[in-house]
Image 1 (cartoon, one colour):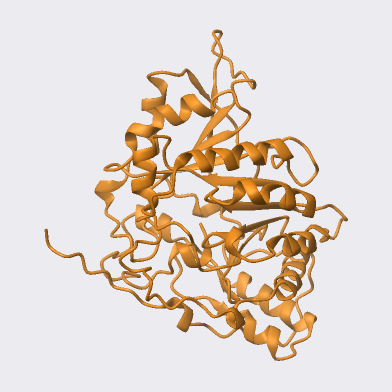
Image 2: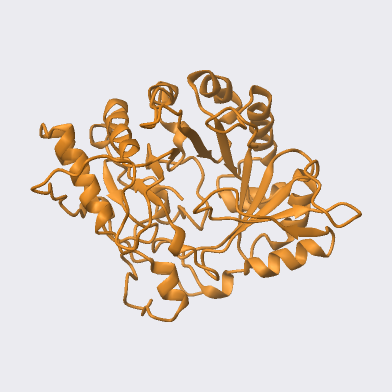
Length: 388
């Protein structure tokens, strides 16, 4: 077998410099980008490290013992993250999601959660404060996170078969310990929205045609009727280290057809504007959605782009603002944070960046308007760096 050569460009060394506009941009909560999309969701990466080596995200041949992770001094402090989050909330953000790497590897993360839980929208409403994790450390962290003010968690789980799961995480980690973490999260109540209403823990499964398709039905059987929502995610061409090929993508339409061989499903309306998942409810004998049986979702970022409704920004662990999961460069907000920039100017710089946003990578690729062999190849930011 020929050796696979992985082009790697360290996005941490590249940055765009934010512009502070001459006229301040007031934080009205109604900020729109160049295509009229509002800013509602901020995803915050708190570490570039992970204890798994999933080949679609952090393949071991790249992220090995010699990989130069960011030094602690380069990372945003909890106070810096909270300051930025406060400014983003002023521009309309209502949801904060902590990601990584694996966010539970960040020491004392519950302190950050407690700080973010104190933030309020201009109308005085609490935020929807969530976290995405691989679940490996969740059993020991769940209570502290809940006590600090975390609303809910999303757990990445790519199969129930222990051999398949160990092969996919590539560090021989047993699936039983992730399931224990999910049980612990349920037990402490990490399944509500920002207003305290039941929302349910979400389970994300990345589907790779050559690896874990046989886990789709077992996963559905396991989580059906539990109050948790299982979502199937198409294997995405994020970054350049995972050797992505379209042949490895199982379209979401095929996932739904497979599920329907065993479970009657009915389509459901989106639960919120800009929602990435297409929702399907388990039906009862009368062909009507039975809430007690729950639902599944599919995220079709490859075969059915949702760029038109994308309302998400991403903040990297050392303070770069990215406007798209498939971006090639971010804007360096850490420099502004650490050179004494006033909140008014920093807020205006954030607004100026979002107002100029035109990103719609997946939509253009789907329309055949991108030369993916040259446009972004070897340059797109890695998922492990800015979170999914």
